[in-house]
Each structure stands twice: as C-alpha cells, then as structure tokens.
Image (cartoon, rainbow, N blue to C red; front, top):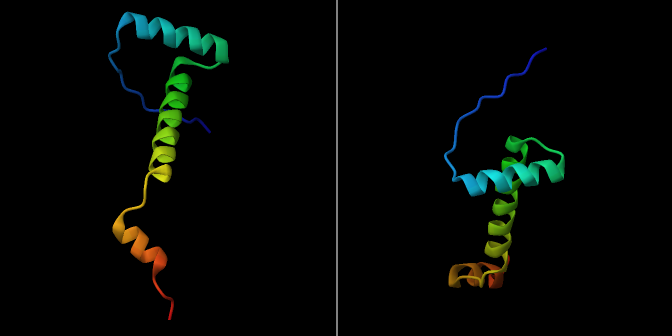
Amino acid sequence: MLFCMQSTSVRIDIGTHEELKRLSSELGTSVGETVALAVRRLRQDQIGKELTAALTSPELQWIDAEIG
C-alpha cells in the first residue's frame, strides 16, 4: 500500500533555512520532520504555559463547588 503525504511550501529566510538544514542533519531527520518536531514542541510549550497560568474566577468557583 502506498501512502502519499500532501505537502505545501512555506517561505522562510535563508538563515532560517540553513539552520533548519543543520538541525535536520544533527537529528537525522528530514527537513519536513524537523519542522513537524518544532511545531509539536511549540505546541507543547504553549500547553505548558496554559497549564501553569493562574486559574480564572470561574475555574476557582468550579473547583470549590460542593458536590451533590
């Protein structure tokens, strides 16, 4: 069975492209895989920041709510 991955182009400056190629080489991954890893890492960082943010008033009310 043959799987084809759709692709698209993203415009980046030459310096970023060179750094991306260097990272790909160091990691032993393709440029596309390296971009996917970077996007995943950024998303994980974003989730981490959301999880460590102070709770909002409605969230605190929900946590403190009586059950039953």
